[in-house]
Length: 308
Length: 255
Image (cartoon, rainbow over all chains, first blue to last red; front, side, top):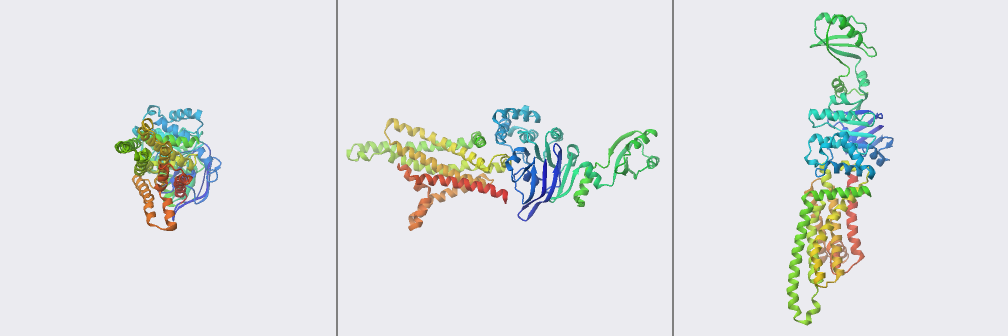
């Protein structure tokens, strides 16, 4: 649905994006991840047709971004980093205006506005001036304008920045609800967000692609072992020995109150581990995957320069 | 075309939900009312004195004694006030980040520019129509010649349209509204004083400079002389401003 090939953007001598190639499948939510000034916003601006690229190709919804700009713009909903709002308009009149410039046909305009308001939960502020609504509502309104023309692709630049925790949860729920119906690409540097919302990531640093793929794929390619953290009601040395007896186990380590268990990819020792716990009357307080530790993965990819 | 009109409607909404349009229109109407009042009072006084001497009777002409100076005054007021109308057109979009919304929508840059320009022309038209109301009364109580009167207003509109075309260009160059207004104002003044430079220049230069000056063309119209070269001067001036705006917006993205 979104595809780039050798995409490069230079601002004078500064290379913002360099030879970036990636692919996002239809109906998936994909995260564009990277430190500040990695080129995330520039990439998104090129995809939305706001900026031309210096070299390379990009296509969105089957249209070439540079050759068929209007068709691309028609199939994209875009929330820039600074939510583009007119403070002196009401929520309703703003959405009506966006529907018009996104070429929603006249008779369907009202329906489109109602739908966007409904999805983003803006009903209570519809007739208020934008300058008088809260930050959270402004962010929702920004998302509402991005989906007003029911685009195939939605591009969100840091959609949860500056929101309070409750609002962040709400916006993430909202984005997750787009899955299947829209293809979503969102940029962020909040790793928890990626873990919660995204099917996969494109990680860039200094304009270059560091890694891309689903979270599981990445975890597999960057660590040799799969594994879990286990927190039990007891942690004595005898317990470690219990797990060491399991076939295929590679590593048994106590880290604080948790035990870290690892085994090679392709095996699944979760069931045997649980069985061991039950057989030995050990109560499992918590159990989570080691491989999904995205912070670790991210730091290894970005700082270690482990190009794929 | 529909998208263009959406932009115009949105611009008009922001003009009339902020104090800018009201203040500009009110001050312009007030000044024009004041000029008209003092000119017509003076005209009245002179007319009464002159009419006692039938020899001068032919020389009492309301078009020349009231309207021509009124239009000249108003043209200067427009020069001072229209930069305030044009200054926000693109500067504000840039500052608010809404330019990104417009430029990623499936509408052309030309439509955006024309939509905004049209909105500023509507504000200009409102200013002129409101300021014309008291002057219409002279047609009820007297008999001015209609042609120079209408050409005068047409001239003011064309002059204003050219000012706004230049203003749109400057507003596309900066995100600071004050800078945009000052640059517009400065350029307009420069084109105004070109006619002064024309007096001291010679030969071809004199022709070129006086052709370029706003007010040489305007004088013709207030005298009731309609020349298509004046019309084409104003239209090409406005067009040139809009064309440069288009280039600036495209250039900034391609740079």
